[in-house]
Structure formats: C-alpha cells, structure tokens
Length: 277
Image (cartoon, rainbow, N blue to C red; front, side, top):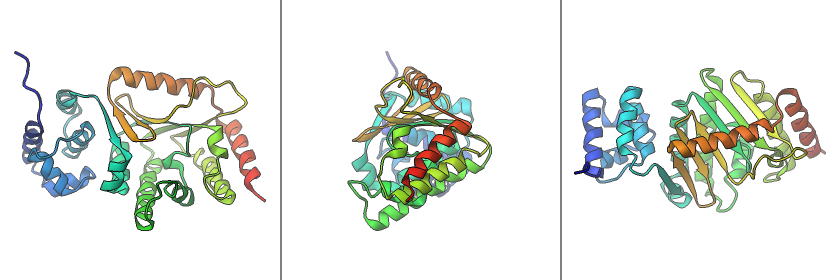
C-alpha cells in the first residue's frame, strides 16, 4: 500500500512538534515567518493547509538544518506548483505579501530576476513604487503606503554584502511611462547608482539587439530551488526541478543578450536624458 496522503492535520502536527522541540514560542516563529500568530496557529492545528512556501518559511524560522528541511519539504510537495490569485493577496494585505517575499529573499544566496514589465521591486524608488501600486486596481491610500514601505524595506538585502543579485531588464521597461517623466529620470539614475554596488549586477536587453525569446512574463529565481512567476491573475511558485531548469535556461538566454557595465550605464543615461526637459 502507498503512503497515506498528507493532510493539513498531519503537516500541522509535525510543524508543531518541531516548534515545541525548538523551544520557540508561536509568536516568535510567526514573526520570523512573516505571518500572523493566528495563521501559524491555524496551520499547527490543521485548520489551514499551508503552502509549500509557508512550510519553508516556518522551517527556516525554526533553524532546521538544510538536509532536514529538504527532507520535510519533499514530503509536502504533493503539488510542486502553486498559484495564488492577486485578489487573495490583496484581501490579506499586500504589504504582508511583501514581507513574505522579504523572508524568502533573506534565505536566498543568489537571486536572478528577469523583468519585461517593470523596474524590479528591489531597485525601485519610493515614487516609482507608489506609481506601480496606483495602477488598476489601485490600492487605497493607506494600504498603498504600507505596501510601498514594505517593498522599500526589502531593499536592505542589497547592502548586506552576503548575497549575489543579477537583474536582467528589457529596454522597453525603462521607457514605459507609468509615472511622470521626472520620476522616471530619478528612477533610472537609481539604476545606474545601484549597478555599482558590490554583488549587484544589472543588465539591460537593448531594443537594437536580436531578442532571444519572448518576454512573456517576469520571474525570479531563488538559487536553484524556487521560481516565482507573475501573471495577470496570480503569482505562481514552482519548485519542480524541470521548471527551475527551464527558467534558468531562459534567464541565461536573456542575460547573454544584455548590456552590462559602462555600456549599460550609457544606454540608461541616454534614456534618462530623454525624460528631462
């Protein structure tokens, strides 16, 4: 007979046992996992089926060894691909989603991010981020302010010096006016500045070159274990090794077509100057 299927109750009991053994309180683990104590309680008591991402964050908060974490996660991955609708993230509080992404980024050694739609969140100025969250369906003013603040807090990882960041951005992203030209000019100045940080690599795929693929969506690769993809209706998370390899290969193709260093900065500055009076 095959193994019994995993249930919310069995996963919750296992996570609660690990937390009890660690000696940590539920409040501490919830805070480290960027979730509410109420949500952690529901997971531990089997009232909510956690996502693979929830489980990974909880195990990281418990300081479980990488080997034990992988073994536990392997048993949870009944479905290695998950999609969370933006409307649900909006309902739960989009700033909480930013906090969850921050927790994932802090467990990532090498982050690769491809963008064909917007300036990556880790590189955005406050004004540009505000414009992003003002796009339809626009967030209420207070919610927007909290979400922008949470996004800006994520950017602290750029200065820690213990991770590598590789961003690949399509040139048309630098030209799209989602905000006032002056705001775009300041945003592009920030790209040039951040490109000089140690551990930060920024490439721009020029319009003048031959495209290696269609920039159908944006995605981030967290080491070789996790891919997060954004679509119009949801954020898709996959840990399937075949999917991860597909996105790694796609990233490499765009990366090879990109401009870097002084060539990239000259192009960005030319676009920036076009936004200035």
